Image 1 (tube, rainbow, N blue to C red):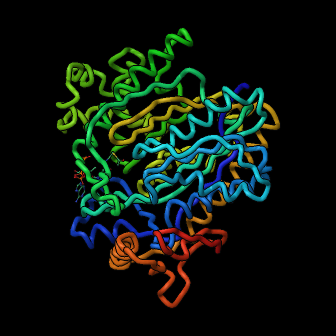
Image 2: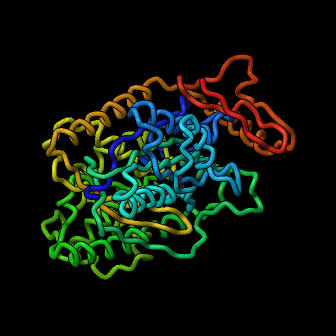
Image 3: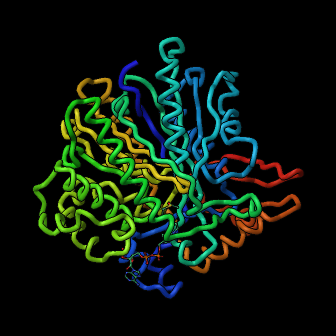
Length: 459
Ligand code: ACO
């Protein structure tokens, strides 16, 4: 099979959000979350939604909106770090959607490693197709779902929630470049969810370590990726050669800096020497990773040199990240959705490449690239179907409900209470005398019954 990649998607986020200008005022941190980190809004779930309900919502929408024959799916994997069970994977919960046609011959389970698991779910789908499509003639689905919530004040404002389901198959309008995939993995404890605190949704976070690990993984992935480009294509590519560069995005300031690191590395390696402030960059040639992280001068100089490219390659695709917050596994991929949302001219994309960096604490990370194949009518039609999904998601984003920081804080308490309950419990959101704010066709948690079993219905 050729050009294995993305043939469709659905994008779901909860109807609730908190405005970060409100939250930073409430937290006595005026300017920090908006001006400082570059974010606008943060989506969150009440206690009647969890990772299973969101995965059901987004996968059922994908099956319906793309008229997928459920017998035609041969692989389905889920990337998440928002577990509701230590053993049973969310993938098995999604099998109820395939029950009507009794399709039980579907490979894949959940992939977990912080924000990186979604990438491995996608790679699993791509690799399954590579190995099996010739004999199976069936497609794959990768579902990325997370609810990012934190206990600590400084990190709490970097939460978020969303889910994406991708239809993956051959002859796709957006394909993964074969062989151009580098990884960086290392044993570190920058962010983790220990089993001792299993009931809690909150991670243990070493914020500074997580920033350092992100930068190190980025540098290493980029070096290894560029080596593969040279080996396989017999030529080099610089950042300028990509139509877009996308990152796992905990908050926008972090990826502005990440992008500047890549441009700086291109400069050091001679792939792009024609930059504003080149003399200053030359003086920074021997800076170590450690030194670079704490040097105001370093960030100032490299951000200045990268600024024009940032505006062209990164900034146009981050709107959903700014408005949803960090939705962990889905975070990187919302940038593809924004790109599809804003580009209607197929010629602007046809034959172009995008570079992607996926990071998950712990750590696991990868860099890889996509090609836009829009030269034939079938692919252009598939692209247009995806634009419909993107337009629809953007419209839904406008109809979300803004909650005050007080309401948000109370809802976080409700989530804690639900999770910690030893007895059967109905979500507080359903017990408030009015039905909660959820979009139509959304699955929700009706109650947790005996033996902690979770029950769902669709609205
Ligand atoms: N007004 C304007 N700007 C401000 C203000 C203010 N009041 N306060 C801070 N800033 C600026 C800072 O100067 C900084 O700018 P700079 O980048 O130019 O230096 C920027 O805002 C970011 O602020 P920080 O001080 O770096 O933010 P903080 O100390 O809260 O640390 C951190 C960020 C550690 C990442 C924290 O948010 C956290 O722990 N988050 C969870 C973990 C995380 O997201 N890690 C990232 C990768 S792993 C993952 O995705 C989970």
